[in-house]
Length: 326
Image 1: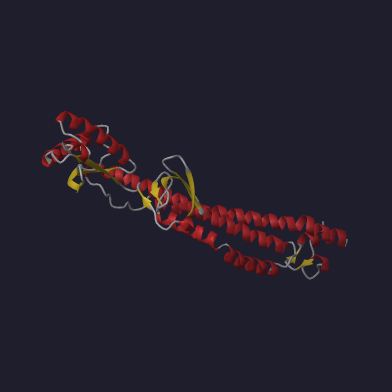
Image 2: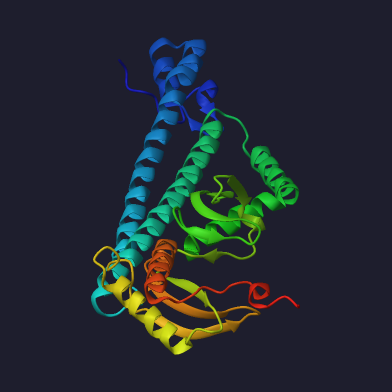
């Protein structure tokens, strides 16, 4: 087989806007048939060029994904935030923060990989169209005009995506967190770029657009507080009630079952309010995230049992203490 001719010797049928087809020139040099040479350029040269672009894209995608994975690993082992709980509970608190940071880093890494893949394959698509001999300038212009039109027509969609990205970067909440969005509250089941799915206490699944979320109350980050208000009658000694509540809360804190759930020594804050027929005394217990409700229920059960043993009466409606006129 003869050596392919130089670029100057190539026939016009082997010259394209995207370059010179060497497969076309080789076939023409061998057969001196412009039809076969042109067909070879389309059936051999262009597919090989497009395949080469795809292989380069896959290699570049793999390399960039490796770089993203490296950034994610660095983010996961970054400097730990200061532990909120001191003493024996500092380690679990640190582990919780590290787990949340690792989840956020993986989510951001997945987002970056999606962006990288979209950009690379978009460029390959445009270059492949150019390789086929089509003019891509009108295509790029049309894509720009279409992008502007979609930007004006889908402002809410863009707003949802941007809000979702910032929520992930700022770690406002994650899957498994219990949050309050104002009109709805529940446990987060899924977080995407556009919507957040959560399930409330009744089992109803809510889909909330990220762009419509103005404020978030997260009850699952770092630590929680169990607030228990105990109402007693006006005839009871408040000092005695506070002492009993402190003992019950301390016993609950030292219980092996709840030792890992309660972070600090419980506190009895004292009289919270005075009602028409009761005095409300508040007890607070600092707990691990999402454990405040379990601790509150156990605290109320123990207070009820201890009050029964101590003879402390719960408040009765005011009308039962008033003697009817004779």
